[in-house]
Each structure stands twice: as structure tokens, then as C-alpha cells.
Length: 96
Image 1 (cartoon, rainbow, N blue to C red):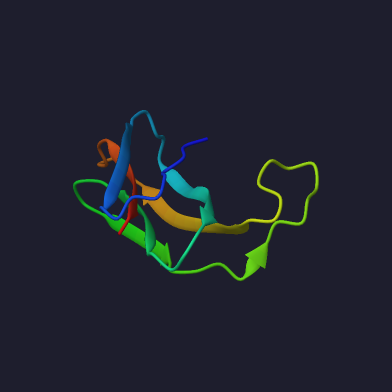
Image 2: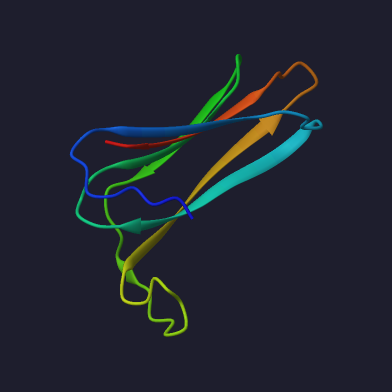
């Protein structure tokens, strides 16, 4: 689990992923939201970019056995396609 503490600075975490076969994919991330700062998930290659974001979460985690019990949780999806001409895929999580 990646934890980003109470920082007022914008934070970007990224990972380059290789070896995709042609096809359609989904990237997803669960966020534990505190406050109303924007969280963005982006998938990019040299030819394409797909982005999704949230500024809040309406859902509270009520699973008592979960370490995030009582927190606001949000899942963000980004759907993207890889074709035979695609190169490396960059997965980027940004909190502003």
C-alpha cells in the first residue's frame, strides 16, 4: 500500500509498464480520500492518453476486518487500448 501523508505539495507517483499484447485493458486504483484534493489516474503512451479523476468519495468503508475501516474509499478506473504500434505504458497517480 502506498501512503501519501498530509502534504500540501502536489504529489506524482509513476510506473512504466512494458510487455503488453494488443488488446483492451483497465487500470484501477483504490484511494483512501481525506479532504477534497483532486486525485488523478492517468495511462499514457507516445500515441494515447486516458485519464480519470475524483475530488471526493461518497462511500465509507464499513468492513470491520479491513485496516481502512471507517475511512472514505474510492476506486478509480482508466480504460485503455494497446495496439501493435504502442510502446511502453506509463501509469501515473497524481494528487494535487
